[in-house]
Image 1 (spheres, helix red, strand yellow):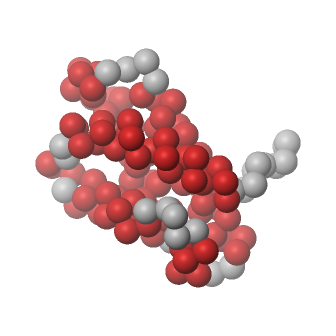
Image 2 (cartoon, one colour):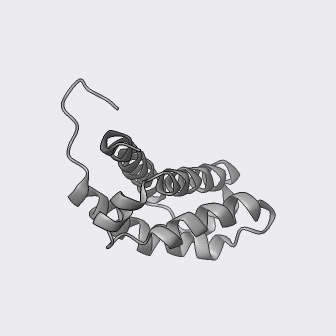
Length: 119
C-alpha cells in the first residue's frame, strides 16, 4: 500500500470522525434512544472510521503509534458483527471521550486539503 493510500484512509477517518462529533453536538445520550436515524448514522460513521483504520498499512500504524489502532478496528468489528447488541451507553462514551482525542491525533498527521481538491 502506498503512502497516498494511507493518507486517503487517514483522511476518511478524520472526515467521518468529525462528522460523528458534529452529529452529537448539542445532543444528549437520550437522543440516541429517541432518534433511530441519528443512532444508525453514528454507528455507520464509526464503522467507516474503523474500516479505514483497518486498511491503513502496518508501517503507517507504526509511524502513528499514538493512535489506538486495535481499539478502533475492534470497535468496527463489534459494531458490524454485534449489530444486534450495540450498547448505546458505550457508544455515547466513545463519542464523547475517544472521538475528540482521535480527531486531534488525526489532525496532527493529516495535512489540510487544498481548496478545490478532494481525495
